[in-house]
Amino acid sequence: MKRFLLSTALFCFAFFSSQGVQPSLGINAVTFLPMGDNFLKDGLKNFVGVGLTYQTVFKRNMGFGIELNRAFSEVKDRSVYGDLEKPRLTNISAYFIYKYPFTEAFSLQGQIGGSFMAITSQSRYTKDDFTEQAGAFFLGTELSYKFPKLKKLEIFASPKLYFYDSFVEFRDKGLDKYYSKAQLLNINVGIRLNLNEK
Image (cartoon, rainbow, N blue to C red; front, side):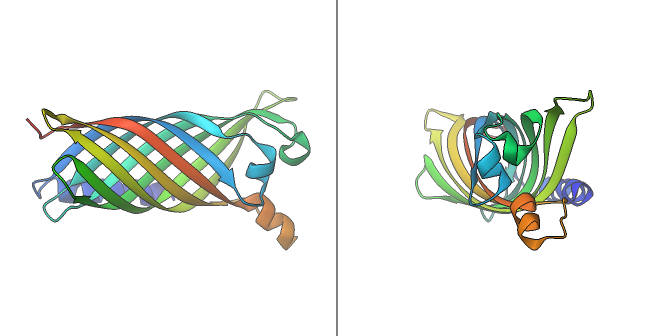
């Protein structure tokens, strides 16, 4: 999954760089809210952290984005999550976007993509950390506002729904579903620098 995301990101970056793109860099506050009946929802509190984004939009309002997030949580039920503590989530996403500017200042964006996720926790009994890796498909949207007198700056809010599917397997189908699949609502709020704007 990591190789696929990296190769897709590099290909799209190289292709879009020749298409008169509008590149941007962003920094944002993030939260991941576990949803549904699964071990993340029952065992952990919400994740909170920071993220970095790079997006390119070309002539037909279509484009590509990559995103790196790091977020932190706490264990709320050890009977579900085990003897682990201080879980931290690393999320690397690559996605396609369609950005519709419905005024000079406001734009609405649709997103679809894939993600590599890793939740690393400290063990209470050994020095080694425990890491669970997962792939995820996600759908998202974004509302952004570009300052009329300072078009280089843009603020945005972006909810995404991730369908988490870890590489953990159990023979029991109920346990396998509970411990390997989850939904995560991700909310990003941040500021973006539009590199080609004057």
